[in-house]
Each structure stands twice: as structure tokens, then as C-alpha cells.
Image (cartoon, rainbow, N blue to C red):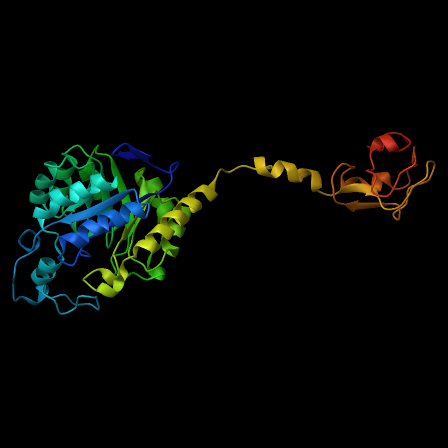
Length: 352
């Protein structure tokens, strides 16, 4: 399964990278901002815009147990999980408006269901794909249920071991599945990305591999494409200065536009494993070095090193033939710059 299709768009190593703009919590509780983000994603050249469907109640419970308090040096330290999810969620009642905005903007949309109730809700919209978040990769029943819906699935692998990814791929069964390299740091540092895993992931699972990119800037995403990533997911915000749970590691629209262009250029630059002049190089072959007369040479002259030089353009013998030319006799008069060929030399045995 080297490629998958989402809404008719083939996604694989031979196609330009499929760029997903993740809205996540960057609407900051405003439907108008969410709609604006959908249009910004389309205008930036992204292939798809992605939502997240969950509620605090479907994701966690409110508890005083310390495990439910965010810690560990994150952007959200000190927050209760339930409070964080309440702030960050996209209200499900917005879905009609956001789906309409995507149609109006001409961009594919789909979503990440955090549980089966969200997946069942999204079925009503006939979404063309589903995303499994890194935190849900261990929820194998969810993966099996989503795989059973008959749509392509993209699985993020932040924090996951090889064995956990193996289990998720097995749970996906025959569903069209792509796998995203991911570091679930927010933001992630470049030295934490371990992008050299991408070729190994492709070989191990025979699936399209991509990157869910939580780093700042575009370097990691471009490097991922150079290593074979077919998909790049990037969080999108209207303005980082607006704040919000995810703004610190999100791209602004102009940055996403630049990223899309850079990723497609990077993919195009990979080209093929081939040698020889490209079509646009053919004209320059005429300006490579060859042997030509460095000064006027009269017919009958014995050629010396002062008479002949390797120079641009082409047209004469190869520079490596110089030793065969030296000591030969000029068959005709030669002006400065005339090409030295076997035809202008008196044959002396088989000098070639």
C-alpha cells in the first residue's frame, strides 16, 4: 500500500506532499475565526483542513486525582485535563458551518475523532478520511472501529514504540492507512524529531509516511519530504499573538503558504536517480572543455604543448587526448581557437 487516496487525491511518494492545515484549538472559541481559518488554509495552498472532534466528557473525567493535572514542562502545566479540553474543543454544532466553509473555499476537510461517538458523528458528513491522534494510537478498539468505516485513515505516532505502531497497523487491517512521524512536544525541538526513522517506517509498514510537525518553522517538514514523507500536517493560526492553547507552535497563513511552496519544491528537487544532462542542460554541453588551438598553427607543424590547450567550448577532442595530440603534425592551417580533431592531424598509425 504505497499510496492512498483522499477525496480523489492520490497520496504517495510519486505525488507532491499532501499538506494538512490543522485548526485544532486556534479558533479560540469563535466560529467566525474557525471559518476564517478554513479559508486561510485554502488560500495558503494546503490540500486539506482538519478539525478535531471531542468533548471533555468523551476525553476524560473531572477528577482531583493528580494524574488529571497537566505537568511535565508543557505549555499547559497546571491545567486540569477537563478544563483544557473544554477550552480547546471545537463545538460539534459548528460542523455544518465549517463543512460549508470548506466547500466554499474549495478545500477538503476531515477530522480527528477522539472516540467512537465522534467517529459516528462524522459519518453523517461522509468525511473522506479520519485521523487518529498520537494520544489515541493505543486505543486499538477505536482504530478498529474507524477502520471499519471504510475510509482512509492517517495515524500519528507521537510517543509510540515500534510494537505500539505494529499493533495500530494490525488493528487498521485492510483500511487505507498512512502513518505520520510525530514528536508530541508542543512545540517540539528539531533535535527531537528523529526524521531518519522515515525511510525505515516506509520499509517496515509499506504505507505512505508523513510528518505531524509541531516544530517552529519549516526546516523539519522540508527535511521530512527529502527523506520520503508524503504528508505534512501543520497547525494553523490566524496570528500567534492572539494566543490560545495551540498558538505557540502554529504557523500563520503566510508561513503556511511559504511552507507549501517549499515542500513542493523539495519534492520536485528529488527528481529521479539518473545521470547525464537534463533537458535544460543539453545546450550547455556545447560549452564544456575540449582541445583547441592556443595560437596559429601552420600546416606541417609538429604540435607542442604551446600550440594546444584545454579550453571552453566543446567541439575538439577530449582533454584526456592531449598526450595523443602532442607530437602529431598539423594537416592544415589552424587559427586561434580552432578545434583540434583527428581530421586536422596527419595520421600516425593508430593514435586513437
